[in-house]
Length: 267
Image: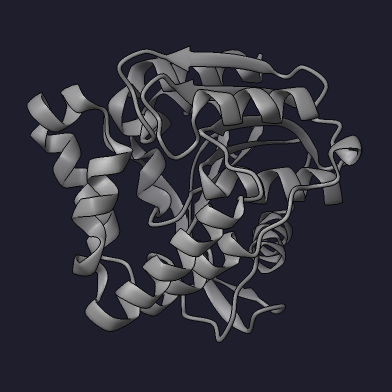
């Protein structure tokens, strides 16, 4: 089923002097669900899930410099948290379930630590944490590469590392979907996000009160199962679900089960 968007447009993000593209659908009186995409993602990262969640008040947005949002001068994990807060304020959301992917998972964790009374649940697909030096160097090198050569300079390498072997071999529609998400990005916005991730820090774990579910891909090289386990342990033993035959694009590679996980978390 296609989306039934009830509201879309641009919301101001005062902290970064940008405008954030948003979409709202579902039941405006239902449980609030805020989706936070990751590096190279957009609102459409979660498109495969929304048809199964129409009883909820579904709010998606592109963070600053990504998708259809405008480009800021600088970004950071903190500025992306500010973006989330701007959208929350725009829609007056409360008792929020935040569904996030990859870099969005780190943003969501920081948001939950900052706003524990607003964020009641977290559903994190392949979340990342503060990077070791090798990861920082890789992110900074990727930022330099896309500034020099555009998104084409990294898109296929990223996809090759982020999708499972069977997906790459036999699911060309998913490969094309992921490639389009990446190739349509503003190169500078993507580079800024790479640098924000390189400089990102872990949240204050003890400040997070949200009930958390973490989804790991068995073949994920970006947020490896060990990373998901480490985040779970930092949260005092959050639930971890592993998708077999899936790498880092959980919502594309296993959309049906991903939607079921979110629905169960909302119960």
